[in-house]
Image (cartoon, rainbow, N blue to C red):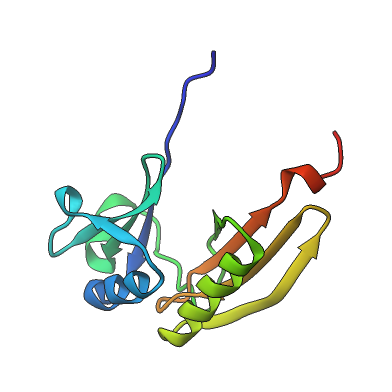
Length: 137
């Protein structure tokens, strides 16, 4: 049996309090055990988390320059949703909380997604997958 793995994604933010407020508006919660003035663990589910790190603190974990997410794409963070309506709801909440639309909604066989940029320009894609409608492999 394959080992069950979890992902802990670290992203830099310019204003940790503003980022926490933004993602709280989207319905996310934060693990107080991994929260201080430099960082917080945003709970994604099933033990997975996105660590929001103050940019200065983030720099202590790398020798490379930190990407300016407003002008370059460093990654696209995709998260699941339970329905098409939940996709739209989260993106609308993100836009209402100060985020920006990234791309128009995308529809493919068995999949619906829409994306937004957070307060620091990071790209987030919210996806609903209807596994019963996916093409057979």
